[in-house]
Image (cartoon, rainbow, N blue to C red; front, side):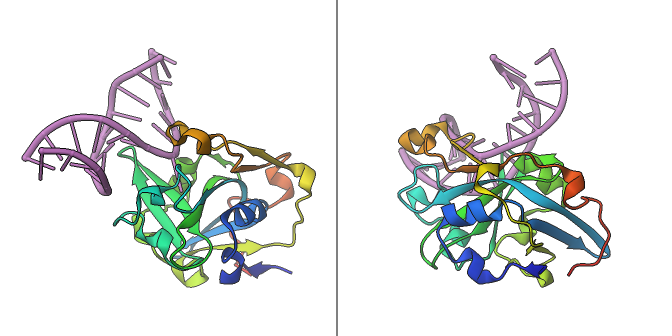
Length: 188
DNA sequence: GCAGTGATCATA
DNA sequence: ATGATCACTGCC
């Protein structure tokens, strides 16, 4: 029942992956320390036509990972102090990714990267256990009514793309009924 | 409401 | 080389 999300999970449209990541577990392992939580908020950044997507102006050194195969972490630094965590989706050469905006008790994309000790060293790594950061399906089904969609946050510059409902939130999330963020149980 | 903080990218 | 911008947060 519990299993690590396979790379094929990410080799789908960013919007589909963003929706399906709600309720999945994000697990971080650094040495003997294990931290995990349930994904509660995501945003899709979908391709070269999406004005909010970093790849809108083409491939650069920063966004190069988005052009790679699905299932790699895209981690970048912004505002001089914050790390953002994304997972690359879709085909190689099609730049798309899903931003992980909320996990368990950590409400906010920069708060969760800080809590999970995520920084640029993970950029370009694949989301498998060996990398120290991966995701698992723990058998929780998310009903459609528990999913809310809204426009993305902080992308006002993207004009009509700023209004598209590419942000996904898990409603009614209660940390106690899912998984403890301080769990020290071994990974499945 | 807005300062902080520094990498990144376009412009030159 | 320079300056604007930024997928945010915390404090006013």
